[in-house]
Length: 520
Image 1: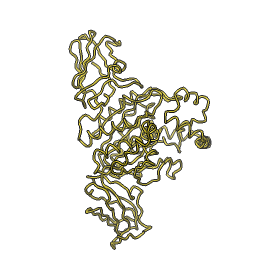
Image 2: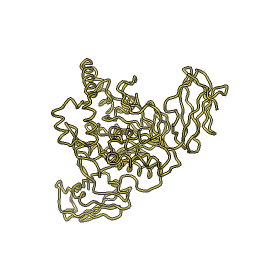
Image 3: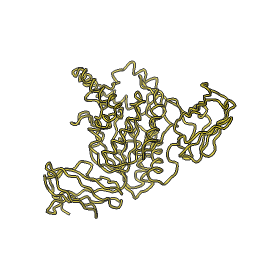
Image 4: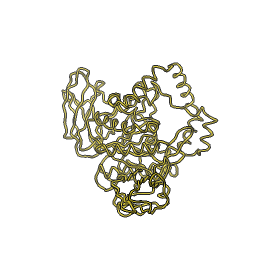
């Protein structure tokens, strides 16, 4: 079939060779052509005809054909001439979003560092996995763009995988191996060191009075009082520092875990020029709705299976607001997509503190807020790596584990092929004389790591921590027995409530129980 080259048909890079469309959902396509012109789109037996508006914009909706590889999305004009033909696949499309732990590239993953060939050789064992990297764009003109791949669809290869999201890589492999006939498309849209307030729209922030005051109003107050000359000078100095060969090597080694906590702290004291503090302002990745405007908007409407979300570290100082923020974000994205898609959340990993004042002090509250959001919203699900994490590093290096937990969650809540793939959480609690029982959902067979459990379980009776108690597990129940559980006693059970600790309770799929507090 001949294709007539046309400078008038313009499509977002999302609609290019190698694209993966979502099966079993309407496929939305948009672009520009000559004003008031008819365009005919076809994808196998699905056909749509649209007329462009006065600015040449068009939107079309196609019925998704049966999943599979190597299909043609064809655009024709009113005369039947082919304007463009794109090679696409139809399968499952997942967005990978959040901050640095989702941004964390495969080259930093511990398994990749130990044996890169082994980790990437499995790409040859099945169909190709496609990915699209949304440019890390802070400003509309692309200034400070931090993309690692051009803005187009790619096939994961041994060469480019190291610069792709480690979680996305392992998650994509597990999905592919589960069903090799279904093409997998991964849209990577993350940005390290960012608050969720940057990822949702101005309208959504303004709708919630608490969010409006904390983010929109406070940002405007900052702008009204700041010196732009001083701000630009700081940014220029930071940019100059970032170009130092020493800086690139230093931070690569930090993320890889090659610099220990003591050495990193010494560097923070003695080589401050290597550490660029985040400066809020009109060129900050953390300004309210900035990443929504320059990243999220570019893919809104592209039909997806769901979202993997790993974020919250940069919101720990505002932990009391995090449930407001995350609920607003999920609802905002769903409203813009016009789709109640599944949203899978990774709880913040165990963490103590990092160089300077980077602390996990408020992580327990963020984890609690993440659990509240999953409990409140439909099709929002929770998992965790509370058995992993690092006391002196904000980036756990075993991203294969995090990806596997996301995979189990998807297999349970989205694909409906396994049971109890989500993190277990407290379902009920009852007291009987000298013992109490706590039951857990997403669990048929509770297991305990007694060594860790003794460290992370705290029993408080009438305001005092007690040491005299026994714990046993059976089925989905944990039973705690103590002679101090008297009829009129006030009892609290705290489980894994420290910023850094490792899990002591798991379900039959080895998924850690969600940290909890129970009051009786």
